[in-house]
Image (cartoon, rainbow, N blue to C red; front, side, top):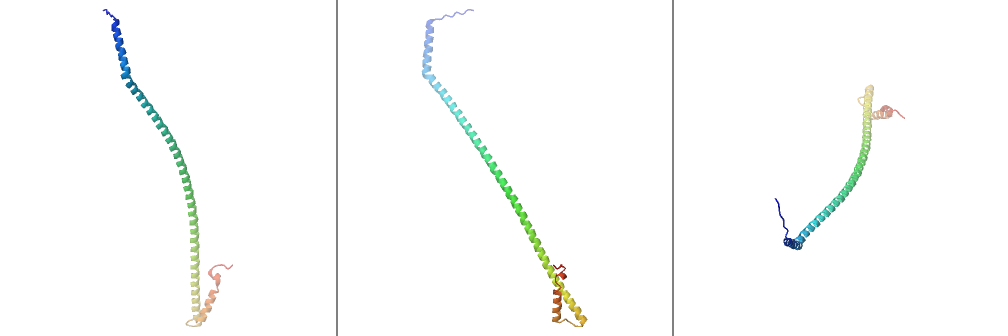
Length: 171
């Protein structure tokens, strides 16, 4: 098979003129809007990339600020915790001191009460001894009751017995 292609120069000229007219037409009416759309799209993409970069930088700055604030808060919390611990230790020491003072006061009060009760008991014993001595003396002497003068003498004698009678050594 053999194909015979014949090129006619007028046909080629017609085709070249048609392509030239099409090129001028496209250059005037089709390419400017297409090029504008491509440029607009490129501008929009560039702006979005710039905005994304700004947001990334802002996020990095915010992250740095938050990390610094977190470090600051942790440091303040540690200081506050140390201060609270010191206060608690001081309060515990004060509680121990107050408890010791209260204990000493209670012991002193108890000792004073014991001494007072002892004095009352000794006074009661002395009265009973005096009454017994008077009763025995009255029976020995044959009197029914001791008179007031005798009672006073016995009471003075018992009162003069002093600390030795209380069971305490004299200085």
